[in-house]
Amino acid sequence: MRLGCHLSIAGGLSRALQRAQGLGCQSLQIFVQNPRAWKGRQVPEAEIEAFIALRRQTGINPLVVHLSYLPNLAASEALLSQRSRHRLRQELALAARLEADFLVCHPGHASVNDTGVQQVAATVAAVVSQIPPPPLLLLENTAGQGQELGWHISQLDQIIKLSGVPVGLCLDTAHAFAAGYDLRHQVGIDRLLTEIAQGPGLTAIRVIHLNDSRVPLGSRRDRHWHLGQGEIGLVGLRQFLSQADLRPQALILETPKKQPEDDLRNLAIARLLLRRPQGLISSLAQT
Ligand SMILES: [Zn+2]
Ligand SMILES: [Zn+2]
Image (cartoon, rainbow, N blue to C red; front, side, top):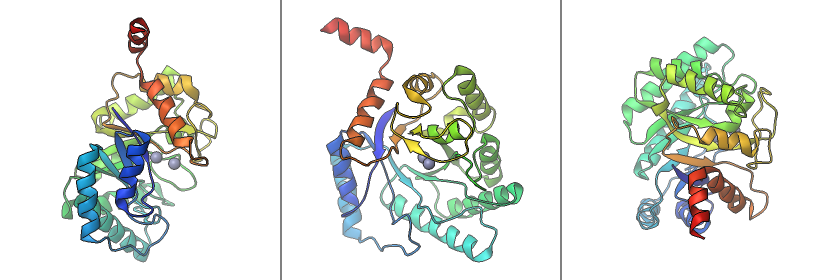
């Protein structure tokens, strides 16, 4: 499991790699466009080549791209649906040119679950069949805020099956907790992992977003918080990460960045959480 952060591309794509290197990250997640604007930036070829070359030097792997916020893959309204599909296609193509491993996207919002699920599956199928993996598209579980789809694993499973194209999962701990999966206790972890095992399968989980939750269990709100300072807490996060069946390629932090030291501190906590007790004992024995 390689550890990384979601980092800014402000100043150019390569800046994110430099930031990742500065923080000692092994993996990295970025947006490839301004996540809050429909108007995309034309990324110059030289910037892409520089990014690929610097990534080779840094050894950052895997590279995860997160789809921007505006597309709604479940949109039923024709214009929004068309724009969303176009944007997903553009970002997936750009992620492919950047040699990204994964593109993470949220399923979207819909007033009627069934039609929403069908819509997402059709959108994903249309785009992935034009731009085959890599990068592999990963659907992320959500907190289920408002009309958000994908808070229940069965919805993600339906989308993946209906799409008929290769799609994996990105599992966000804060979202799962807010959606009602109690990661503080083995019984809650078991419920989540059993649902995934019976649906897309545990190997579908390629990336974990490791976040604490600022809001309580089942509150259906999306509020990420610093590791150990939220409602899941250190004991819950450690318990979750110790599951032998969980073998994602990357663990990405999307914790708040109010102070410059926030990322460094959360990464240090994540490293401690990942240390197995035996590792702790043997490192003590060596001193
Ligand atoms: Zn996330
Ligand atoms: Zn979130």
